[in-house]
Amino acid sequence: MELMKNGLLLMVVGMGTVFAFLAIMVVTTTLASKVIAKFEHLLPEDEKPKRKSRKAVAPSGSGALLAVISAAIHKYRSEH
Image 1 (tube, one colour):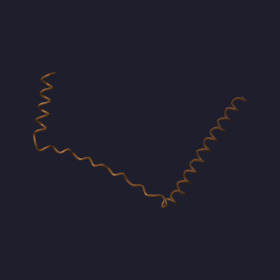
Image 2 (cartoon, one colour):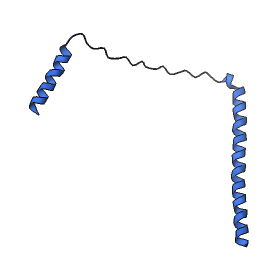
Image 3 (cartoon, one colour):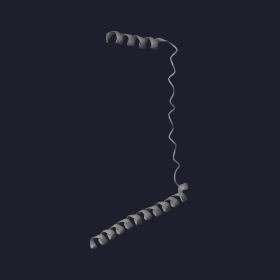
Image 4 (cartoon, one colour):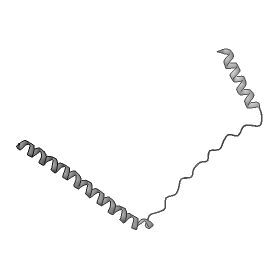
């Protein structure tokens, strides 16, 4: 019976310690958030990164590229 009491006591102390730590962490985080919000006007503004626009590749007006690709495919298929 003594062993059960010690086990329960250890569990209560352990869980109480964890609960107290988490409660302190929540309070500290909330207070820090409120303090930072008051002094936010002193911080420099973040610049938004410029997005690179992806331009679609326009098809070329001449059929020279198409002819070269077709010839390469034809040569590859005839050799393999």
